[in-house]
Amino acid sequence: MRLGCVLWLSVLVSDVSSAVSPPPSSKIIGGEFVEHQSDFAFMVSVRVNRRHICGGSIVDYRHVLTAAHCCFDAANKPYPPQIMSIAAGSLNIGRSNNNSVVKGVLAIIPHKKYDWERITNDVAVIKILGQFELWNRNISAISLSNFIRSGSWCTICGWGITRFNTSQVSYRLRYVDVPVVSQSTCEFYYPGRITNKMICAGGNGSDSCQGDSGGPLICGGVLAGIVSWGSDCGVYPGVYTAVAPYKSWIRKYIDNSSSSWITPSERQACFVILQVLFAYYIV
Image 1 (cartoon, rainbow, N blue to C red):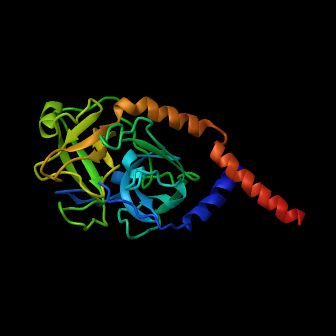
Image 2 (image 1 turned 90 degrees about the vertical axis):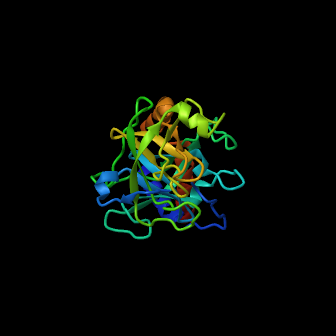
Image 3 (image 1 turned 120 degrees about the horizontal axis):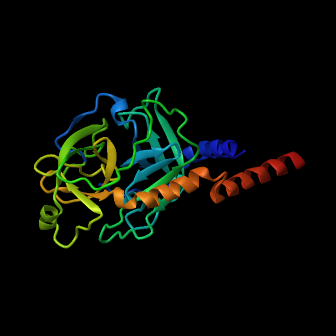
């Protein structure tokens, strides 16, 4: 019953439109095109009114991890779930293929201590309508890191702009390897703004930029960071929300959500559908 209601609702949500315009999001500077979808099978495009605004990472068959600021508009008001969607399975955000899927959004859960002014606790879980049925080498989850990486090289990917101070995004997924920068070095560039729940990486021509926010920082094959903020793409290091300090919060929500037979939102949606069906057949 739950699955049937969710699938029916996902069809309705895919056709919803709104006049709300998403803000510029915060990418790959100095990177190369991704050749194989299977190399970044967890990567998704987070969209508002079907327009790409951010990246995200699949962390299980019903949930995506992204930056909290990707879930708020320019006035710092949360986007209604019904105008958001998640696209997976394609390297090109402007073109679909046999592996492409687009899912509606059921719930958005930004961290309760997210601070939009200081851009701290910049992490959010998005629960999709239904689930990723095509669980294969083209669409799959990435594991979460257990500790903050330091002194290593990591990889970032995204569909963001490829040159600072332009508005042209890359419709094809790009990636680049970036060095992790020490906290003290990062503090030098951003005095008073770096916390122990952030990772700094890149700079000197390799970085993320507008359009890459919410995307992954991959270190040793696991999700170590989430693209968050920075200055002058490719000049100074980019700042990423470290995943490890939030792992228990992420897993607690995901495990509770996935194990429950039906969420309150899904229960209400199914109740409305049953009311409509009952009224129809009674008449």
